[in-house]
Image 1 (cartoon, rainbow, N blue to C red):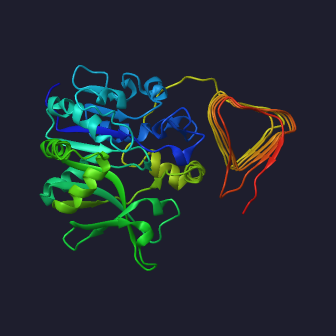
Image 2: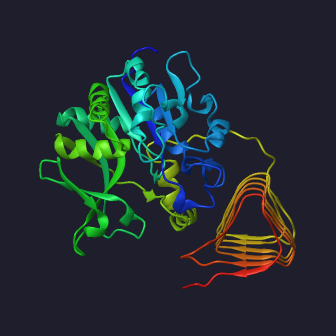
Image 3: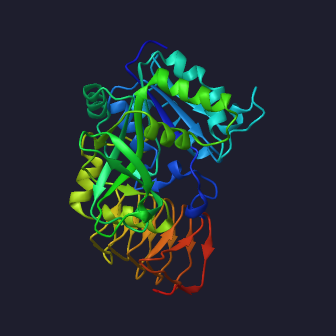
Length: 388
């Protein structure tokens, strides 16, 4: 690998429990989003838009869907002779340490593949996950890092009041000179205190990252890379870079649902997909969507290849979805290849891929608790969730 300015690390060893059943056979990064994208498309685009040519994807379980989607990284310009895309699953972190690098101790996966960082030849490394939905200019983060002369730079977003999902995040304390002086969970903030949400995007010299990883292993500690970075952020001079664009933290079914529904507002759609750069994804050519004479579509995003004969209102419809005559889909997310039979009624529902809804079936969740139907399910019943 030739010398690059920045090396990218996608830290995808993320807990999937709160996202079940959508993550029963895929990681958080593999979740479909916005009609035709996946969450991994966003960090990949952030890095490649900044000229990053070498990216390591460090994964946990259920990574087949990521392989299938990303492959050589051609859509992001990563299929070149310089650098490229490298996959490191938890299984590749076993040699020499006796540890698998599973969730809770993924630091062993990084240690056993530390040669990737060394051989990248990059002076700096950016670490980013897939839960933070944003459109960030990595080159701007690098410029700020160099100007401030700090050891590390961490990206944050200022919000007046944290949402329920933001409470799961850590908040920064920033001094007047722009350096981080503390870290605490958002749930501990005072009511009048603004939240500086830690977006878990870090930039530092590659040599420092290697040193941090080796130090933890030498101390025989079992932890996540994120824990290592949190400790380093407190003890080393760390620059805070404020991000001001669209942000959604994907930590639950509810936040995933809300993020998709947010895209029905033009301002959110433009800010996320056309902010600092256009988001790239795997290209799939489909025929245009067919709208029957009985169709009624309002305030929705509908991908190619669909057949719409019924009513679709305030919903996000992925590729190759069929909505039969007199069927009604409201405030819902319908993923690729799903079929909704004649006379069926869906409201506040998330259908995973390839779900079949029998005619005259009624499914109802709520805004606070959307009803999720697992991938490849066949449903023919009346199911209502309490709106409380």
